[in-house]
Image 1 (cartoon, helix red, strand yellow):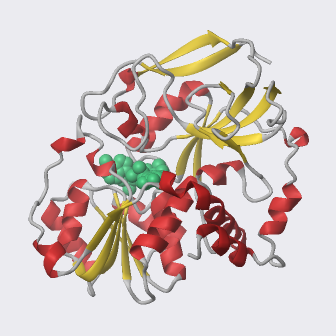
Image 2 (cartoon, rainbow, N blue to C red):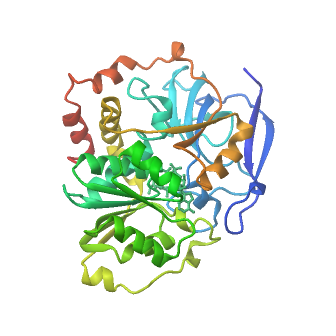
Image 3 (cartoon, rainbow, N blue to C red):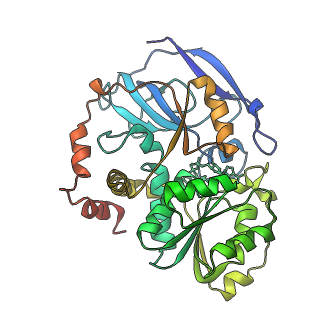
Amino acid sequence: MSQFNNVVRFIKRPDGKPTPDVFKIEKEQIRQLKPGEYLMRNAYLSMDPALVGRMRDEDNYVEKVNPGEVMQAYGIAQVIESNNPNVKVGSVRLGRIDMQQYSIFSDEEACKEINLGLASACSYLGAMGVNGSTAYFALKEICQPKAGETVLVSAGGSAVGSVAAQIAKNMGCKTVGIVSTDEKTKDIVRDYGFDAAVSYRGKSIDELTQDIKKVCPQGVDVYFDNTSGDISEAVLDTLNENARVAVVGRLGISHLADTKQDKGRRDHNIMLTKRVKKQGLVILDYQDRLRGAMIMLARWIKEGSIKGKEDIMHGIEQTPDAFFRMLAGQNQGKQLVKLADIDASVDPTPRWLGRLLISKWFPTEKLAKKITGGI
Ligand SMILES: NC(=O)c1ccc[n+]([C@@H]2O[C@H](COP(=O)([O-])OP(=O)(O)OC[C@H]3O[C@@H](n4cnc5c(N)ncnc54)[C@H](OP(=O)(O)O)[C@@H]3O)[C@@H](O)[C@H]2O)c1
């Protein structure tokens, strides 16, 4: 094992949209483990848009990253040394391992053991894992789409957005995505089965509204909002009576130094006259029910009714580029960085159990419903 850990350090808060000078790559010594601790070799890092919010000094639903700290990131890692009796060497775990090659933890719950018989490591960071589950809960609990309704999804090509659209489509809805470019509109129709898609880049709010109206002639019943900002303002005049809006992300205001600077239409006339229901969702509130959604998603992925895509870059040095690539929308699928291989031969988790849970012989849906609380 290397004695050194290459880390991506967060060195200053961005003034507006993050720029590459917020990061610096440094090499540091890996320290000895204390009693109760375990050391992991990080295998994959996920480049999540929500990390932008953590760079800001403002109220958030999670702790912020402070200058001087290793940049936060979720990912998959494999235990290579353990002083914790509850953590087995070789086990593969998912958690906030941060942008670095090795991580040390003590709490076994902070980085949860995963079963690669259920889905691949990449899928755990994409369509099947927390992102897919966010789509699952926001759609099923807040949006509650009915067959025949029109479901509009901003950041339609994102991991969350693409899964939300595919679940809605499988429920009999018409799905429409909003993405940056015309090229991407074709991609999401082909890859995720959207019925239609519109691009937002270079358009005024009014122009985008008109384009959405053209592809949603019956209006929008469900708006799955991954962006907020101008894109969501453009959606306002397309909402039908009793529309449901799930506020899931803020990609469209990630260029602001402070989200309080977000300006938009303030009148609530549409909300009132059309009886629109709007609710935010934070997946952390669903910790206890997450496994149910993941099992169901894993089954759908195995059957082919939900598709995920990953875009993988390699090496810790590429991590800052991968992050900015995702923010520029240049990624084709969930942007990941691969740091190391996972050694399947030492993983003690029974993969056959994962495979059984999603096999056609197993009452997967019943189990998933029980864990998710009936949805
Ligand atoms: N509430 C929760 O608990 C929770 C949990 C997970 C994720 N989320 C949110 O879900 C959303 C999607 O996350 P993800 O991980 O699925 O994303 P992702 O797969 O990493 O997708 C990133 C895509 O977002 C789009 N994008 C980037 N900057 C944008 C901008 N300024 N305006 C509009 N679109 C932009 C780009 O596509 P285009 O080229 O099409 O613009 C990019 O390809 C994010 O807002 C994230 O914060 C919320």
